[in-house]
Amino acid sequence: MLIMGSPSFSPSLSLSPSLSPHSCTFPSPNPNLFLRSYSSFTPLTLRSNQTRYRFKKLPSSNAPNFLVAASAKAEPLKVIISGAPASGKGTQCELITQKYGLVHIAAGDLLRAEVAAASENGKLAKEYMEKGELVPNKIVVMMVKERLLQPDSQQRGWLLDGYPRSSSQAAALEDYGIRPDVFILLDVSEDILVERVVGRRLDPLTGKIYHLKYSPPENDEIASRLTQRCGYAHIIKMWLLCSLYIKISQSRHVNGNEAKEHVFAQIDAALTHVGEQRKVNSGSVAA
Image (cartoon, rainbow, N blue to C red):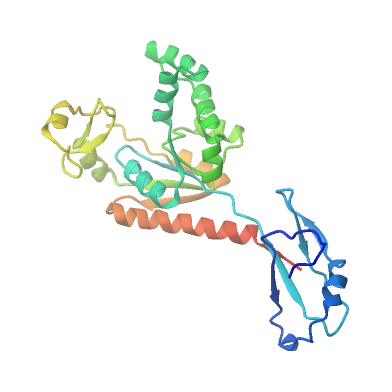
């Protein structure tokens, strides 16, 4: 109900009669009731610096009881997904971003984009790459940090793919205050990883990954230029990295041996659970 001459109310302000069994009968409308009760509002200042209002219980025994709830909008999800090469991160990232609308950030793609754009970080990274040396963590983590702070990542949430890959990289993110809401680790048995790796091929022109059995190239032209990626023989376990994130976020081990639909069902359930918990924790303010 609007009051003539009174300040406008927040659109998120909701009024609902109390469900108490003693307040089912309402008195006849009294135009002075709300004029008196407006002075009983108390401001409630939220972190967004918006002022909202809640009711104090009116002293009149005949006045209906009202509940005013102000719900804070939950922050967008922040997710890190990790796993060994051929564990299925790329496929699951596509499914996650399709459903949740998160900004997908892969450190390798980000590094190449920064170098191509000749940004300050890109120029520094290029110097090391031209020498055949690994780009230092401090440069890569700075790229990741700046990307995570861009407006789309802040508004939609983000999915960090395959980074960090070491405890030192994870510590660097922690030093910058970058913490995921959930850390997803794809667990895939070694024999399945080897099977996936053997058939894996890279298109050097587009950077797309194919598998001769599970995801073959679309045509002979693409097939003719595919190369087999090396460096998978070691297939590093990521238990140290995972143990670090257990301390600072909700860690989820996902069975990556199953079909992609079943793997995503596990991830979806984990993200849904985290989202529901965040809503409960942000809660609603009631008088």
